[in-house]
Length: 148
Image (cartoon, rainbow, N blue to C red; front, side, top):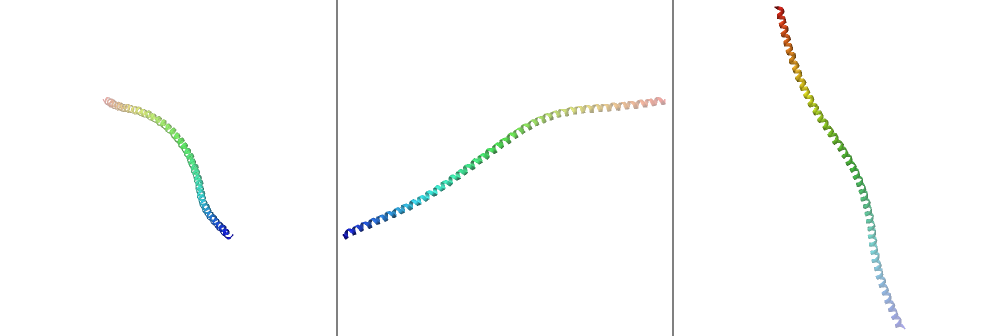
């Protein structure tokens, strides 16, 4: 019958429209899922790059720490060397100071001896002058006695 066919056709059209609407909803959901998937992929790539950057930063920090440790070792070695040089210089300074004291004492002794030698020289000069005067007097007496 024609009315049954019409009814069946209406039902088929309605089912087709519902199927089309469902397919449209499924397409929109699929598109939204694809967009969400693309965002997640982008976030995943960004996270991987961030992890790579963090790993490189960690490696750089480890290298810097290693270089700092080497520098600290070098500085400690330099400090130890300078400390031993300072100790050596302190000993040399103390020895020089003691030598200076010895030289100071020796100079004082030499000055005293020089002063004594000067006094002796002056005394000898006075004695010489006295002897010359006495000799001149004796020569003069001798000449007077020869003349008399």
